[in-house]
Image (cartoon, rainbow, N blue to C red):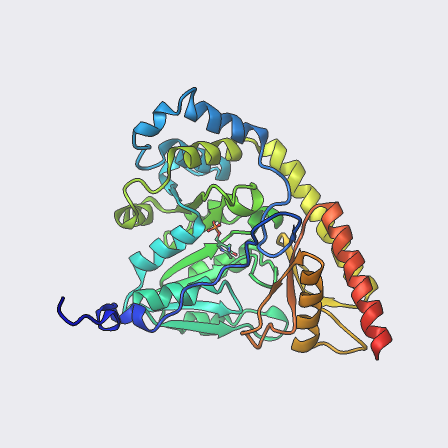
Length: 370
Ligand code: PMP
């Protein structure tokens, strides 16, 4: 064989990058998993029914390719958000939608802008595409620096709403201000919108530069199925269609996603349970004087306080203490802006009771030591 060096063969944009590191998915049971913002309840019972119906007695339908454009699912997405089906796009989780948006609307000369902190996948996608990314810091108290967004010169602006990892939500007037003031494409990542006051997806009928993405992973209990979507003007959908895989959603995912979106009453009830548990958790943080952002998502970003102090050491200590009790939280040691905090997914009342009990135990142990 001729001398071969893999290093020299890797595409320039990929050579210097690291992949996105998702939250831990531990093997084995017994974990209280509050680290990756999954829904704490099972999906609607209609989802399993729809999957079984799609499979039939012997799974024969799996011989055939699925509908290439997920037509029925797109219809349901349109129905759910009150927009025509031509405004809907479906993909393999919303990460896939974000990836396709970067593929379609960014390159070496078309840059990306986003806020900081924000979803840490965006810089990875930018690197992969060889596109520059401008991360615009929030002003004090999570205020948005609109002028910097408008003068960024970026081709596409990613706006996570509610924000991750802080959970802070912004109203429709903020989205409208950005969509009308920014010259390029505005992508609003609404992964956590089911836990906020409203979705801005219907605004895609008003703003031709707006893409609103969503996912069945968080508010519909289907992280394991990989169903995501975008709502946008049909001209944008046509561009996304050019760059996606021809069969980008399997038959079971299409059936599951459509059945979930069709069962609004079930999700109204279960999302309300998460929101109520979130309020109880915020009360708990008040009771121990821990700092947190008021959340519009299914998680809370908080800063544990020990003897009047916060900091990365304290947050790490609590994270590790919880882990030793098989309670998994999300800690971001490599980002200085947020390494003094922890992101806590809202679980069932029982899971949250375990979290609170462990938090009080940690406080007792640490206070005694000082
Ligand atoms: N957007 C944000 C802000 C997220 O936190 C996540 C989940 N990590 C996603 C998108 C992607 O979700 P999924 O690919 O499961 O649809």
